[in-house]
Length: 127
Image 1 (tube, rainbow, N blue to C red):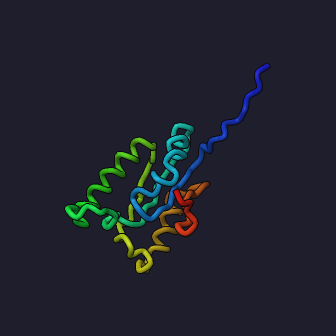
Image 2: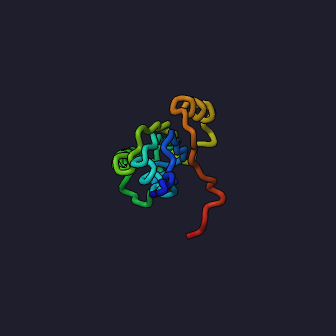
Image 3: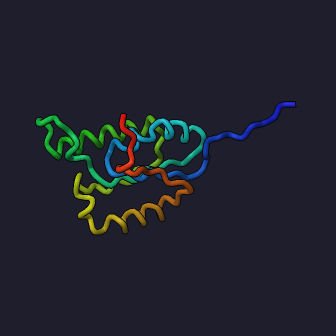
């Protein structure tokens, strides 16, 4: 008689809450790539627009935001992210966004996740 082992993957609603357009892919992309095919409904809550995250002087803030948005759409498709809520705050200005907390609360109420993935930028491992 075969013993059925339960799947170790979660198949409910998951929200990833991050600051920058490439944070989710960098910190939990592998997990997201496994969750969606397992039946999870994955949403991404993104605070900033990524307008200052490049050393390429040819890209201004608008061009960089456009590039980041395009890359995010590619990643969304590859990783199986169902919905992206993009707040569009400027990079390095999140501490000055007075309504950020209220927007995060609304996003969580809208997506109704059972699990929230995020990270503490002050305790990241050194690679």
